[in-house]
Image (cartoon, rainbow, N blue to C red; front, side, top):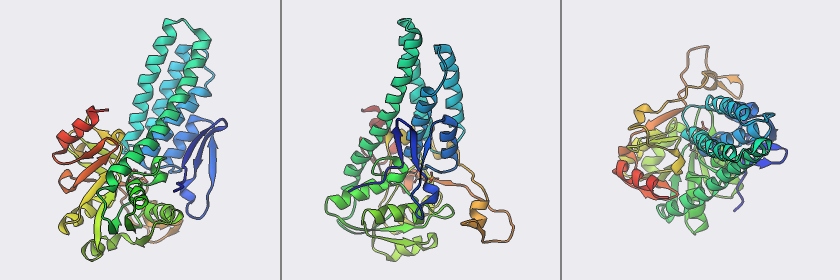
Length: 356
Ligand code: MRU
């Protein structure tokens, strides 16, 4: 099965598929400046928690690679500015901060080694090259993680029937085969006969524009529905499981994901349908005890009052929290690349994150 590539490291720069223009146009941009990468994350050229992590990794790498700093101290100062700029793009997806922290550790380790060897300009050049390698490694790890998540998750999918998802937790969102859609892809590859119910995911329409496009490209059967049909289909539509992605998972299992996920989880419980979250270990934030501590991104009102640039309401106030938090009690299991965590999540997530 061929999956789309939302981001790629090339000798010319960081190449990204412009997700804002899907499904109408397939357009790629090449970025050679970390500020452009930060803007691309902020403006939703690339989105989805794991893909934002990969973009941050490549943003740091391009910033360091193209830096004119010739001394370690100058590079260290610039590295700090690069990381701060990327950290200010989107607040909810923890993979962004995971990538920044990982690069912070790697930079410190490499700088120490360069200092010890008094490597001078050669040490700076080597450090730059190794941070580029680190970004490629992050990308590869996302791809490997998705495959494993898919393998564990596919076993939880019905042999035949319907599965519901939310937003886009596919290849476009992870730079691999997807988390939720990776589970569905592996299930289909291994002989499950699945149809996916895809809510459009207002206001940004990731379901209609991205998930429907991605599944259609892969010839996976789907039915597009509007968000207000979710309850109806969970009640009457023969849905065997719900599988969604995540932007940040707290220590107790509370999960932030695209707005609308919480309502879907409550309705799934009401109708005895298992509700699965599929996410890599990098989406766990074990530093916070519950979902109450997850920052929720507020996006522009215009994304609610307008559709494709056209006003659909009078000029009134609108609200646009981009994510909601599903309490852990509505989640049947959390599928990671290291295995399936079940309640109580406090214990199971700690165990999975400890073992590597
Ligand atoms: O605002 P977005 O499009 O970045 O939101 C994406 C989601 O909510 C996804 O479900 C989540 O990041 C998981 S992607 C594997």
